[in-house]
Image (cartoon, rainbow, N blue to C red):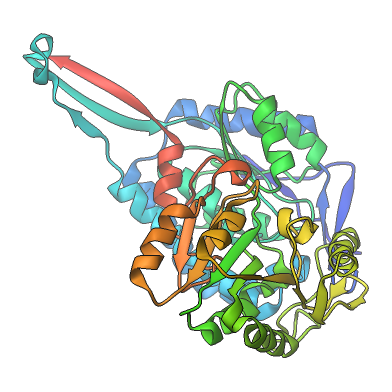
Length: 472
């Protein structure tokens, strides 16, 4: 029988009368067991976190030193964390290793943010009534952070929440995704091993319905959530009086212009649309190619995609494996079938083996297809033709989402014009919108969210301005 991995509250290992198995999406085997926590555990974790907040955060230099030690320890244990990610999420081990290495950066940039984050001076004597007074603004911790993380990056997106919180001096109650809680518990314990006092990171393994207690809890000052727009905006509605940071979905477009290096674009998209089976919010989903290069681009993309290896996530040669669940695979298969039924041509892929979908390219993308207007979160990319760049930009913008977009062109003037026209939180030139580095501001507009992540930007969100005025 698999041993239960306890939840973590106030540095104590917590179990409950009910437990849940964590299974591999690839072969269904049990990879772990966690307790099913309820409102009582949420309440206890929040009470502990509130007590830590009221007692005051450790000095900045101590918090930064903890983050430095976590980054160093994580660097020594990359293989261990990569295995944990891969086992519970079916992320190919090579991709999981990249995630673990990215998490090191996320923690290090959080340490840098802790050391460099400052307030500001206010020129009080710029007003006659302010003469003789000293004014400045301090940034103070907002309070208890309720963090809800998704399944697709069980380490790095957890670190994007807990590491900036430590940098800001905020205690955290983390509710990891039910499908992938083991890595979150592992990294939280690593923080405590590296000197973070108990109670500053509490991890409660609870179903989504119980997470509502965390969202609505009066002692939680801020919710940070990464996941679907439907859930995210529902959280915003349930917590109107607290800060809610949302990093949500996308339907990432790429424009390949007439003068572009279309071969390079095909090569990049052939990876970016399919990494982790397309289960990332900035996975390439729509490609608009100038008519001059359409046929040769589709051929090159299909050739690149057909060479991707599908299989066991533990195999270092595997490029993509199972989706997170059978229901997710059913949904994505439905999108592919709908596109084919509406006139789309499946150039490569389209098959399925259980929860494993073949990487698929659909040519003849039309606006009414779900592939064009929903977030698919699967290994499928649609391609359409354009003649006029303005038309390509207009159709790229014609979406409820707005996280990141990309454009390939050799014309600098055209690129500078396009980045002003594309209405997304991030626009990448001669790069796929799937690209991200962990210190940059990352987030979107419209249904893609209302915040920016990246350690320095997250620390800003997790603090409040306190104005100090001193009469001499």
